[in-house]
Image (tube, rainbow, N blue to C red; front, side):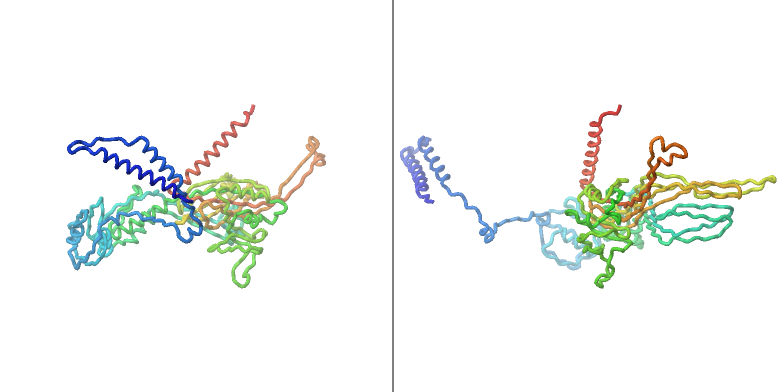
Length: 603
């Protein structure tokens, strides 16, 4: 583009302006001693200048767009200057002293600086150091670490204390309680109980398999078979006792060191050296941050009545490969679908799958569908933040029934128990005593009742790591107690009918690791049930003697698998998790309220 006429017009306009101003100045030069007279510019000159500037602006070429080649050859210069901190603005200096008196050293350290210095009268000793390009704070911190002189800073005022025993008061917020929990899994092969005197029946439910123990009359001192397999998990938490013992182990008790703990007021008084007090302060701060972390545990306990195509169990591999879902597996027991010592490597792998089952380095499952495991396993599945997706996947393999949806919040390393069900009393002991009074024989029977629980119990202990992962000890128990009558002959002519407990229990005991918000699945708890069906012709089926001709009875065997879904959610300090939970509760409440408003009232 040729811009010469444009610039020529602009130049001529500016030249005309200069000449006009110059000629006007020459024609109006005032006489000496008189004030200059202000004169206005010609009315036609300003429009000409504006027109020339507008023409020049319109004809200016637009800046060319930066091409990819130019960006690659000459990257754009970006200057991100770091912000200056308070340390950068402090005066820096070089300092070198040799066996200088401590008091004189500290007082001379702040000369020529805007800081003030106060030295405790008990400060004694000498200091030797050589430092370059340092600030006052850096020198004081170095002296504190090397020579033990402690200091405090308040608004630019430094106070120096001697390296002697000092007493400090710390505030700790925690409950004054002692907790003890026991989780037990036991498999019994049978049991006979000691009989001390008289006739006695001892009947009790067992974990895993419904069983009872019966002691024949007249047989005393018989010992029974003990548990063939047992796991006991004991958690004891006495915070204040272990807390005080930890501090005493850190500072010791010699030379006047002491630790006084008041759980009622939440105060800890420690007497030790300044360096030791700083260690105690850091320990208390880290401890409080750890024990006060919370985790929300959401659980769903599901019974899946398996369809005909999945009588071997739920196909977990197919679920893991649905869409973009990923899973992590760990297995306990069984092994019928496993290759042991594959390729001579000495580990156990799943047939048809290439997923790594090592908990230390788990990988997503990737392989063909497999049959059910021969035992109980855990299964961590990434399905977002809701159980709905997993429930929809399970519906493709059978009839899904949600037995319970408990939710509980607990602190770090604190045992939480969720219990939903009912308790019934059953006879567990019967004593028959015979007494001779006034020539007559009197027989008395004593019955002992014991409550048996039917329902769901979920026992969980979480441990939260710094990166947000949660290690969970999980002990779910699903029990069902039915009444079973048993006739007991107390004497040759006297019989007693007892309602005994027949208990069916399904439970698991495992430790897993999951990310916050990740769904953990516990499966493999299968059982067979016999369902009785009876149909009859109305009225005819109720006729005595011949009513059976108009009735039809049948039995159907149903196989079901119990699935437990557990999702830990770590509660952060900003309250985001609690706000999300409140939002979800409010949405559910509004949904129920709207549903109730739409339904017509019952007459």
